[in-house]
Image (cartoon, rainbow, N blue to C red; front, side, top):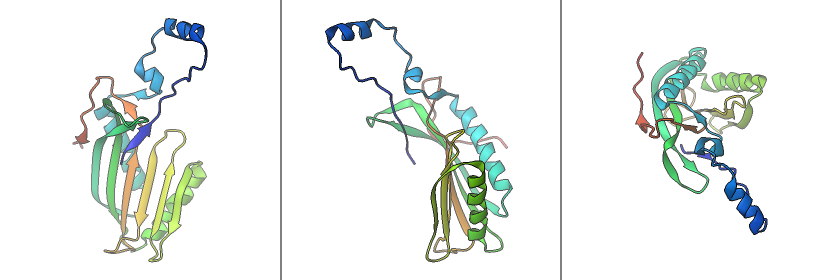
Amino acid sequence: MTTSYHFNWPIIRAGIASLGMALCLPIIPTSAQTGLEQRESHHAAAVFAEKVEALIADLPVERERFDVRINRCQGARGEMRGDIYAVWVGVRLSAGKGDAAGVLTNVVADWRQRGWEIFRDRVLDNGGVNIAAVDPASGESHSLDSGFKRDPHRYIVGYFSTPCLQDPSGAAPFGSVQLEQ
């Protein structure tokens, strides 16, 4: 999953005098221009993984897989930088009672109650449920899906992602992250 960030570049439509004044302004650091929060990537991965762990710990499911990655974020112009990243967590869960749809229906109701922006809430023809939302306070995205061919009423796959962040070291270690347990 690739997350985007956008620069807020001012559009200069003034004459040469205005351009000259703009060139005299102090240089603003990149992080201030992009508005990205600076966080050390491994620490951000550990904190976000803990949040996802807490979310699934409250669900009536068994955790079968839990993967954490530090992924690149693509800029508004398609550029890639070594210091801009998002933390991604992927999970595979199993609803032991075969009620994956019921579990996800309860989750999306909880998200609505919290005031999250729901951007996907659908029931599939096979009874599976696909939900996704953004927490407006953190900008983190959450998606959970059931209805997979193997066992549409049991398996749930989830993807969770932070908004783009900037690693102050200048180089985020992209790829899988091994966290201490």
